[in-house]
Image (cartoon, rainbow, N blue to C red; front, side, top):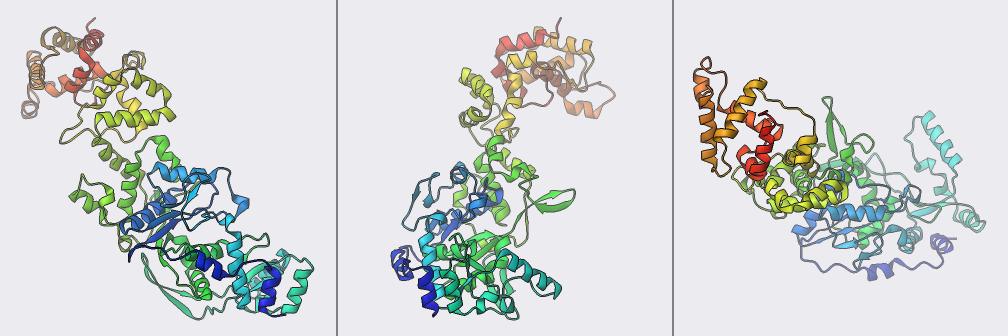
Length: 550
């Protein structure tokens, strides 16, 4: 029995790899075009780190005229979650990340290099495993779980490196006739890669993000095909990346230590490996220390969190690009109105250590982005969000669209627009005082700040209503009238007058306008009061002021 005999015994009806090499031809792309991929396992929700990787992979492919595809790596059936593929596709789609190839919904895929789901590529993997068996670079292993536990215990006692290699790889030395007999008898086995590596030798590698890195060679005889006929991740992705003509593997740096093994597998076939780029882990600061963002601890780890909160996808993508590329912030300052698609992303400008993910900074980015939206755009975004997460708000806004848009238009379209909305879930609280049912049925709390004596407040509001209020005033006239009101009641007409002679006045015009602001909104911090009053209208204003004139 020789190597080819063993290969044919295990895989009698499997095609030669030449069939697949011919089937999956080179892509017709221009020189320098990048073919990249996002290749998640359908084992749960998409992590923010997966979105981070997807944005980078998509950006690099797009700006070089290449291809970005979505491949589902579902060889671990025990951990697979129902409808996870659909969840992955929809999560990417929610952030406008549409793959050029691969899955476009939970079941449908497009492209000429599929199937794009590993569980549907079984015959392909078997062909490549068979090839390694034929050339003596793989072998069947009959070791049981108990055998492997025994090897591990002996390694621990002798303080040897753990794993299945060298003298510890007992099935590697098994005569082929004996292996054939076991296979014919129906004994359970896996297929292992026969490593020729030596950990005393070093492999030098250039990572597109990390730069020059050096590792010991891999000497582990890893499992490449499990007893259930499914390949392991290490083997399957090598075959897939080769056949799908992947030029760049851009992935999390938890895979950096696997580079020697992956390059070794490519070399065993005589294939050219892709270029590797390992993205630093996203970190979170907690109690002065940095740690990985946790699926268990951190709600922001789940990409659906951003939709639930109503943080615009544009803001999330912009923030992730900001922490990904060191020159993005400067580019944005120089190009405040350009779309992020115009930014040229560079892998060598990514940080080599963990990138700090700060939700507060993300919300600041979101405020800036939302501040540039028109009132109509905000209305439409809030309707879209609330139709899924806040139906009463949706109903309220749709009941009087014109009034709602007027509210959203307060301090909008200016050189320095308002930045009080960071996410759509803020909207209801931010605008509630503009609606009478909220205003009159809410908590009866009025924080009047410096002028807080009830009788004084009543006097200010009554005089304003009777003598100085005119809904038809322009903004300058409106403020001049408040100055006149302040002066009549003995308050400083100008803030600078008060600062110049603080002992002469109890308060100033700003404090008087705060009394009016709180009376009309129950808040002392709001957008421009004049614009608020213009939207409220005369009847609402009179009714609210009357509360203090009794």
